[in-house]
Image (tube, rainbow, N blue to C red):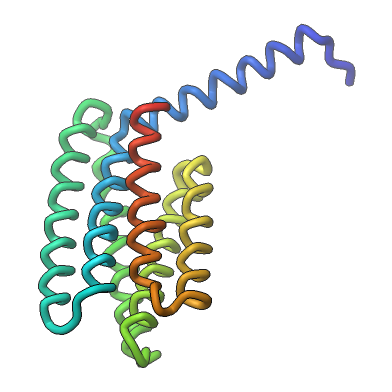
Length: 189
């Protein structure tokens, strides 16, 4: 099959248009809000975990998680109203059920594995979060896979090679990276 130069140019232009539409769709869906909210939670939570100890960390993480989740849901819902149709409600419920079940499985794995320290628990939670995000990316948009793999790799590098600064590593590179990515998607896409 021979393709003329003009047909090839038209095909490339169609591909570029599809890429731009996908990027605009991701931007306008509010996906960047979740990245920024999660990034802030990780940045503050892991920084506190690096420098504080004791029961206060439980309260910090619970508070940050509730605040980050509420903010993400509120802003995501507000932004999403502009682009969602009534037919997306069943999908949203399935996504919610998926994340709930994944959290329950993570709790079960942690209960069975009996990690010996907080870093192991943290690493298991991070792996489950990244696995869930990877599943969502593969299901809905392959364009979102590219950030999940580096965050996972950075987490593993920090855990395996830099245990003394693992939490600070995750704060700056994990949390800060998600914030930067969210801002980049919002402003550049």
